[in-house]
Image (cartoon, rainbow, N blue to C red):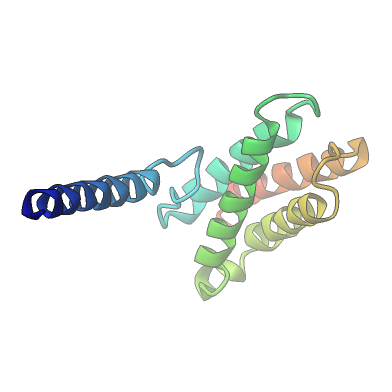
Length: 140
């Protein structure tokens, strides 16, 4: 009886250890840019734009589209939450333009998660991305 109890305790502890390791390691996997906001506004903005350009250009039947969409949502959330309350950044024209583009992308994903981006929206987003890049070169 005593030997049975110790075996049960051993298996319980081993299972708990494996469970803790699995949960801990699952939090380490990081795809794309999510969690990669550095605090350098210019660099972060350019990286977010590049990441979103790739995501928007994916065809609707691409197998990685769902993962890319989830990553884009994470990138948008990370970027906006990092810079929204930073008065030195939030008053820049580049920030207001990029936040408009990010809101449009997030709105499309919320309203039409399974539909590709309409061409009209893609053109508008590309125009806004170019405006942001030009503003960053000027320092505004």
